[in-house]
Image: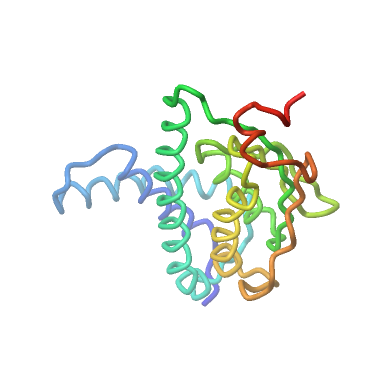
Length: 201
């Protein structure tokens, strides 16, 4: 079912308003907060209606909701794991950090999907999106644990699988992801290198 976009955006703003204002968790307070949000959200959405498409497919949006939940779940788990990992590295006496930049080619192609994944990478401790290469449709990603580049790419691939369905991309999660490219190329990743021993110049 196709409906005008701006009222839907106004309702989304109203829901966000409830979270931002921090209403007490009682039914009457939540309803009041939602109605207040509509009073603010609908006019704002109407004024800025030219910034988004004229119509939205509600059926497609409802079908995408489970994938949005899966994406948020996978992202939250990775966020928790990455926080613990970075805390361990910072508190370790030897500071086991070996930064690396990798190029992660993407299967998603829409601007919104690429932006969501790039921001997810940057929000996650230990990784940051440095740049987007439009020609190869790939992200340059900096990670603190460059000894295992595939481990940096693994959560990104999981998010991308859900994003392919969430944003109705042409590719599918069953399509094999392109190989990552490590900026430093092949190098000795043995224990001597990690310990700062024989392999270092």
